[in-house]
Length: 174
Image (tube, rainbow, N blue to C red; front, side, top):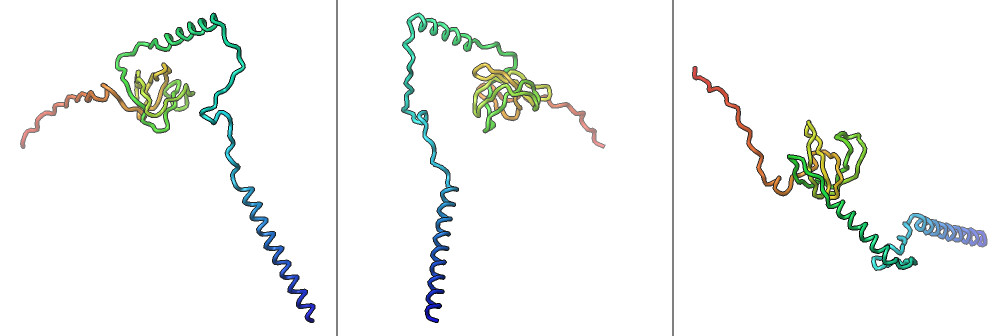
């Protein structure tokens, strides 16, 4: 009978050791599969990385041609379209920035974007006042919601003109 008790005790201890080992192995595998992988590193992530090109050095004539083209492009970007009367400077106050739209409708296609706190020029306002047509610093034009803009510069300092009060006839005492 003693041999039976020893065998049974040994068997139970062996099963406990196997069970604990399997549990710990399962936890280890689970931890390895659920942890995020290490962040990959790419050469352009290093700010000190300089790409080495295998291009030949350009000829002097090509360099002069490129300089002329760059100057003409600079002149084109410097040319600003004339401002319509009533235009004023403003800035974007929507923290996410704004989507420039082709027309003053929410469903119209996007024509670009405007960053938060970017200085812009408001060209006109829609008839209902809900939309403003604006021009960005790089001469892109489009429509945005008016509530997302704040006047800046001289336009903000100028107080609104008070409207004349309607004169009411004096009431006669009874």
